[in-house]
Image (cartoon, rainbow, N blue to C red; front, top):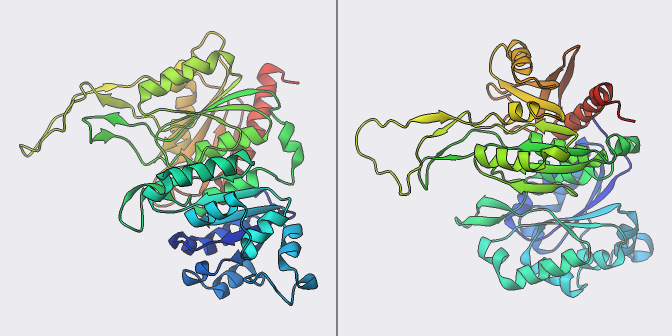
Length: 408
């Protein structure tokens, strides 16, 4: 696993229901070697106790602006100097308004004004609050000042409504923050200047306006590879099916829905691509006909005629001047055997054999294990965090790419 022992992360917790996710976030960061300190607003303590966060962080939780036990009694200055990065999670609408206006009426808002460390916020609020013009204006102000915003994600909220406003999951926050600054700085030059295209997530093949054919892919592996490639210095385009993940920093994202849309987007940029990594779980078939109106329930059975979707990976591999092409073989049995056959049948340079069966399968999980298969070798990468796995894959892809393209 890539460790981050020199990364000091200060987490500011504000008063939203998503605060219950913060202990898990602290664990995610510490498991990757980061040092974590926590500051809580008064209202945050109504949702999760300081004792809980002290237990998981291993350090006292800071609560008050005037702390007699801090250096010179100035806790905000001490913390402001200590942090490599300040993360506010969850960031409520009220707190976003406060820091956009420059208020400093508690420890967290004061240290944000006093620190030179980068500021990251993970908003969490009711979907209508998020979409309110005042919140969007505050968002624009913060982004114009260089504040990085993670999310929010779409989905069911604690209030029962559905829409944008959920805090991004702790695994994604930890992965995003720590991918920006690892100890292995040499990794940043692995793919310097190389154009990389990554596909990720599922596709959605519409049956009617409310139903469709899809799969369990979360997009986490593809997004991790896009982030790792970008951290390696590559120019990255991410062609993504429908997922609930923030776009990795510095990555150009093209959002699509169906397999046909994904193919069109890929072919639109593949001519300038040197490495193509097809991670998306593309539906093999789509309905011959998509109904304009919802199909009403009638008989006990219903038949839908399907037609085969275009094969995106094979299409890229068949290009006259094809890029170095990497595919994924998501299998449930005879994993290596099926993956070897797929690599040959699709004429790709490398295939990642991926077990997606059962509860420990790759879909939706934060960890994964693959076997990379090329013409001459098979490289097994053991179970690890998907971002760390992506970093290892990028190293292997670079080595194989050098063999075929003599990249200097």
